[in-house]
Length: 339
Image (spheres, rainbow, N blue to C red):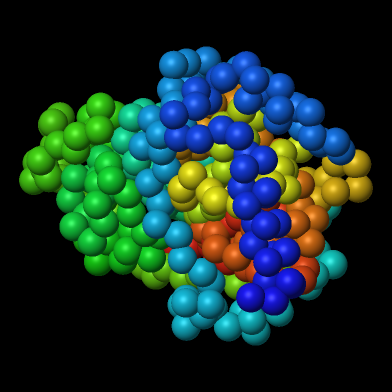
């Protein structure tokens, strides 16, 4: 082995060992939190999160139910750039929030509880929002349980994939949440329903089409034109301890805990950094954080390292990415739909 190879090997060992925490470490371990806050140049603060009381990192992985893939595997599912070229780049505002743009039409944050159903919550919520935006009127919350219990292309509380989730929304569709309420929070999905628990008709809402979005600018244009999009990203241990500030994973964090899916409602700026508005809607993140959203740094260099595999349409390209409330690798493409 060359001396260079040896150096690389040693460097990797040092980086890995510097993480300290392992699967048996409690998320709220005091020493772990101190180490997180001791990193020089932090733009955020770590702290105790009640949601993870007595949870080890092994316990917390149950929430990370998204199987991540890279945008390069889905380029054939992306719309042609010409579609977005008709929308001038100069029309993209510095800040945008779908909740303000379509007041009363964007659905609220929901809690997936102890089930790896983030993939289903974020997908069903994006479809719910887009129905309301397209029809210009408030619409019912669509059923995440329908996807968790009935989408056999995914794995219920054990996780799912964005492309497969949207195949289900196109081909089968989902009923309303009042028809088939969420009961999988304990980790066990209900039997797939064929009739509503209330008196309403068993009627499915389908996505007319679903597609990936390649590039940050195209993602911005998609959101400001048609509404929220679904994305996924890698979650690192430090993310679970986020309290305030603009989150960015620590340099020594190499191996993610798993993948998480959310919906993105907009973007903004802070201290000359572009950040993404990633509402915790469709996930348990609202419980994790002491704020309605998590801010994430959007520096191109950082993103290129992390975005090597996220959800939605974040891609590993040299242009800045806005990691909505999270500074974790987003899959290089966002999934959304047309109605």
